[in-house]
Length: 273
Ligand SMILES: Cc1cc2nc3c(=O)[nH]c(=O)nc-3n(C[C@H](O)[C@H](O)[C@H](O)COP(=O)(O)O)c2cc1C
Image 1 (cartoon, rainbow, N blue to C red):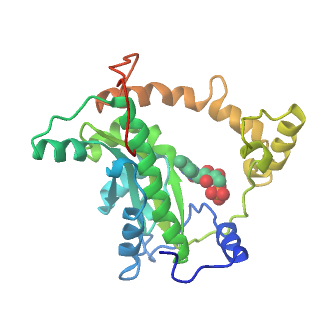
Image 2 (cartoon, rainbow, N blue to C red):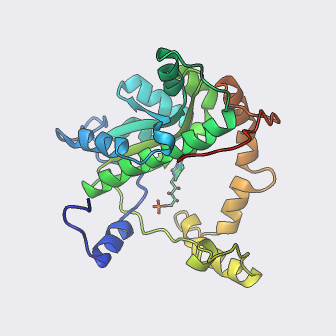
């Protein structure tokens, strides 16, 4: 079955060109979240649940944040203030717990596959969250993914009472934009889309990509320097090194750390995954 009314290629391009990450949303006069009109939340959740899923398992959960105190605390823990002010705020999680429970409820012993859990669980979580955000954009909203969950992972596990088998991937906020950010650039396609085999970009191509991407790092009057921004995130001494230990600790706490264990590789694999 195809889409009820297929869009034209320019319409599809225009839809994706309208995407903006938005961090400031329209609120009620007192600054509290503006509720979505009736039915809109259901559309977003429906879209999330229609996402394709590996091995049929739906290895994800969404935690919808509603209580103002929880929203406020999540804004602190993620260092993203819009967790408190957006019309809707979620934490998108990998979740292998429910599958283990389904197996147990039908008298089957769950296997041991922590690396697979991370691979499948994060994949499913991203697909569900992306569907949710795309549906929101189709309804005229914008949103923001929040990798800042990694800033306060231990506190988030506690606050949301996330049991073993459940790992936050990111927050996701949705609302009516109260800012109009410019369209942000992307790395030139030849560096991202490879044909038949992987190809490293030349130094010249990489320098050109940095020049294309520089505006994404501009702050106020300060011109952007994308390589500097990437260095602050991913370079030696950057913030990702600081996050690494917290993520490893959370993986261990949630029973999702494969470590060096090579487990027992199956001798043969068959069927659709
Ligand atoms: C997984 C993920 C995590 C992100 N985390 C944050 C975040 O913590 N805070 C934030 O302000 N933006 C966050 N973003 C938004 C990105 O900064 C944004 O998508 C990127 O700059 C490109 O901008 P655009 O979406 O408007 O094209 C995140 C995006 C993704 C996909």
